[in-house]
Length: 174
Image 1: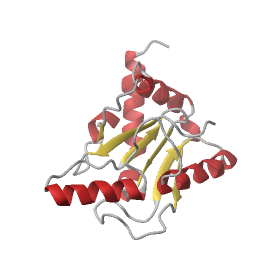
Image 2: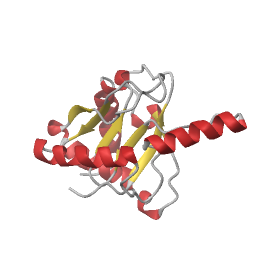
Image 3: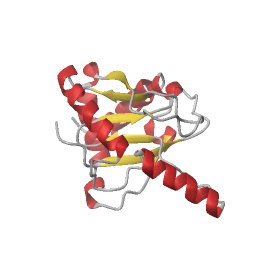
């Protein structure tokens, strides 16, 4: 496991898609990250590794907020993670998530995950009366960990991923 560095930002499409045949790219709008490391198949490569380890994929909850929720819309107390990390690896990863939330972990591109960054975006949008998209889905593409706050998404993510696996598998020779 690596220290999280390449974290893809995304926004869950609202309202959440209810189509049982939808795949990840239909329910999450991924941001353009601006660095070559996020290009050239980085997301599909992470998805392939997740597919290979799909039997180990597990949803876990982490309390990364020691402040009130920033938005009742998409902050429901616990961060949900979806990964195949072993319990001991995940315990280490939990520490990384806490640092990332507090803004003390450097990543390749902005994540919009730290409380400070989210507060700054919200204040700027109120000052200039525009509505920027604030990320509410993150994907560590080196450690193959997806994380988000929206509780209702957690039960649907495995279905969306399985559909993505099928789509990817149909397009990629073994």
